[in-house]
Image (tube, rainbow, N blue to C red; front, side, top):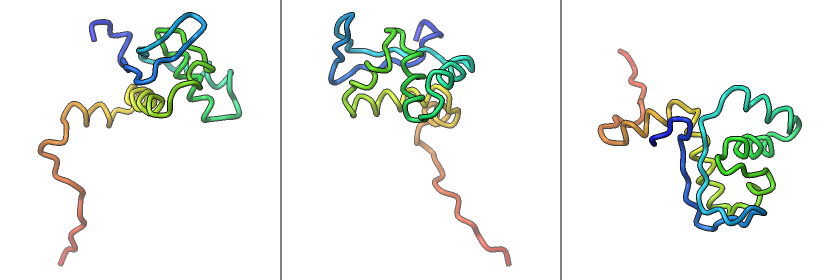
Length: 112
């Protein structure tokens, strides 16, 4: 993407109807530690809802948690996948390399 602050763009199969209009694409910016702290302050007791809070904080479209809760489950799964890819190094490395040339699982070999 041209703007390095925004790292994931998700086209929704089932657009959201929000008070500010229909949303057919969600764009997530790269998160910071302060975003995690804010999500923990907003939702200290429910980890699943805390993730939704964090996702909402990262949306360029300024979606609310209630907006995120209205996502179709298939769209939510795609948003969560892209969201997790923003901070899981292994996912970024795997995407960069792809599956070509992968050796497969490591199998222990007994020594004699």
